Image 1 (cartoon, helix red, strand yellow):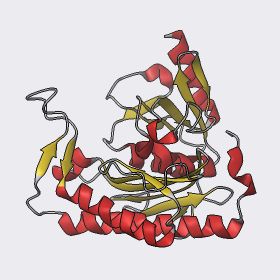
Image 2: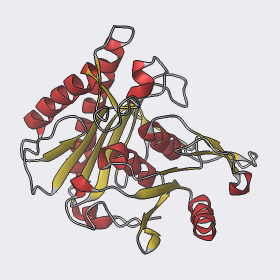
Image 3: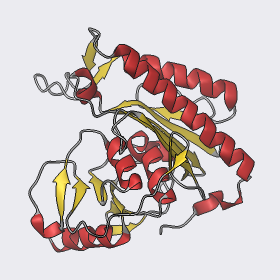
Amino acid sequence: MTGAGPASSLDPALLAEIESVAVELAQLGGAEIRAALGSMLRIKYKSIDDHPGLFRDPVSEVDRRAEELIRQRLAERFPDHDIVGEEIDHRPSLGSDFLWAVDPIDGTANFINGFPMFASSVGVLYRGWPIAGALWCSTSHALEPGVYHASQGNPVRFDGVPLDTRSNPAIRRRLGGEPRATVAPERGWDGRKTGSAAIECAFVAAGLLDMAWFDRPNLWDVAGGLALALSAGKEAQIHREQGWTAFQGFAEDGDAAHWSARIAIGTGDTVGAFVREDIAG
């Protein structure tokens, strides 16, 4: 398993409080999403000026409203902690050891089209290391919405109930999350593209996916999900100029808020096989 980083010295009571607040914030995002379902949303597209006609990177009015509410609640609970979010460019406590990475709606394109695969993701870093995560997901292993959550040294839970994240050994061919729909039987899994990095991370942590890889996501896309995966005993590798290396935290190259890299998470054997194939190919 990838190492524990600098967070091993944190007070367990503080860590438990951070996880509890992360769950509260993810539930807040989920409540905003559910309240908006079926309404006529106002939609903007971030990249329309650069690529007219492609309509990439949609953002709804719910994205910003949910992030505003999350930021307000966090400021009440941890006023000295920093936060980075997808929709609002404001760093309230730049330089803090604690950085909250928030994606109020991960899978916005799914959400605005009514395709029920989206999440509200909250991840917490301590000196660049993911120590807690809470992901409200529109669906789950239990076929109902809820929050997957964990903190370092503690099991992954779903709405407070610990999960058995072991895989069924009778399943000989499992599933892997991929950024593009491809057919690659030599990888030993069937590829799945959900349109939500957060959901795929949560499903890796829960054992529904054997692994998932992402092509240069932003911090808020994977911070919460990686915290879950590491708590579930999964491994992570990132790709840099020198090739694939074990994940050593989000702050290797400076401010974690600006992190972006190709990353693979999952069981050690499957991630290792993916990396070897990627190098060979």
